[in-house]
Length: 358
Length: 269
Image (cartoon, rainbow over all chains, first blue to last red; front, side):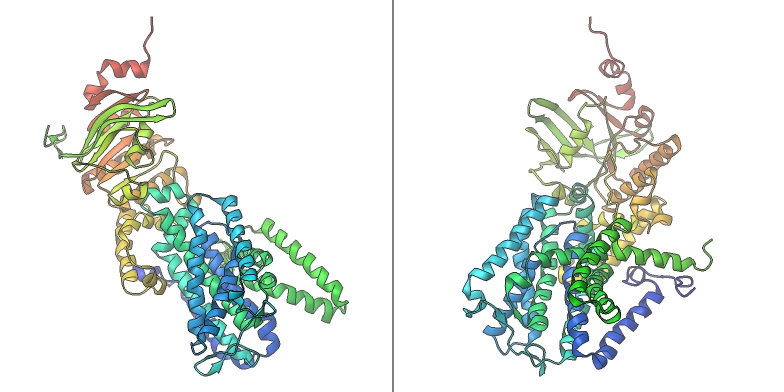
């Protein structure tokens, strides 16, 4: 009843190939953007920023990155945590080496460095596929974490082996360090998320995206229609790592402030992002957001229900949380292997006909 | 014959586009293709036929760069072709379809056809990331070409359908559309009519003739249905056990004793 495409005709090819060809979707997208940019910053507080919004936004960038590689290009990667660490440490080095540089530039440079590292570790993908590639990226994960632990240059020879984000500004507004306002760090991350999503969507609806999907669906056929497999895979690794690097930089500088590499960017992080992508939906930018929201919100929601509503002891709730999240993941994979994005798509298809399905 | 010939139905056939010279292909001890030479002329429909395991598909794979022959040369446009990867062969203007459909199942029909245009799309990553300038113009221009092919093959109504949901006959047609979208100079069809019913075969034959007629595309095809081959093709190469046993117009091939023996069997006494 509310969701209609009737009367909504595309009269040119650019109109037909835009991100939201249906007017209703387009309007909703602008409303979401307006609320995120113009309303939320005024009502945000520290709890909402740190418990929900910042991790959601930052993980969303990482999921978009991994989704490009795994969902669109079909290359499984378990090195996400390691690549986030590259972003974080690159950002740290830029922040300390060039104190006057805008934080925007620091984060983007961190993404660029990660893109190159990602491409380097993507080189074996020309020869190996599937599980074997996953194992090769696992090697990247362990190697990178080991590297940042063992080479003191990366953490500027600090005694603790940790890296701490110094105070840095964007246009005079502090976005890192302990004195950051909640709205500033939120907006800072939101800008990156918005651009990441737009860029990812533009790339995936154009010729680059078709190359990636061709490689994913059938690499032999992709080669026969003129796709250079090495180039396509390496661009996927590069773009994917760029986003993952940005997310790692934000995770360290804006969200945590201080990082110990094995703890923050260990193998569990790689799996977390992979779960987000799978639960959200492979090959969908919206799915990346849905997956990130699911994995961030669910533990918080369970905690609120268990501790605040039911009054159970905190430790029991914490344990149940793990059990329930795990069970839900399995349930999701069985019920809808294509993830939340597919559920959303089905719901939209039903809505188009509702309430007269015949 | 040097500069081409005129077919029975009055079409002008041009100069040699591709020439296979003494191709030999071995897999270990197995000789798949043994010292085969033939040419493909501009504008003609060239059929390669033979019993199962004769080496027809291997021949096509040699042309499209999947297999590297141990001996012999592939000449393209009057010059020997260096060893190329399949994607480089595609960039030279050779498109093909596969015996068992090789479409991108997760993508829509339109996206599949658009992948055929990838060799023509050259905008950089940054232009594409912001969907501005060259990227946008190029997308629209190539979409127009793709839509022309979609019109031509009468698959407009399934444009946005994911390929995985289509029936077999339509998939074959979409695969042809993808190959045609590249506007190839030479089109290789590996059993375009395998597994089709009579009606679908008639449709497909009509499309092949139309492609040849309207776009002037040179076509090399492998087919088992003799009726189709004899009707469609201008010249036929016959292979058996990796060797060439016949080459000529359908009439010549039909009356060739070796060919009859290969197809009907011959008593060894």
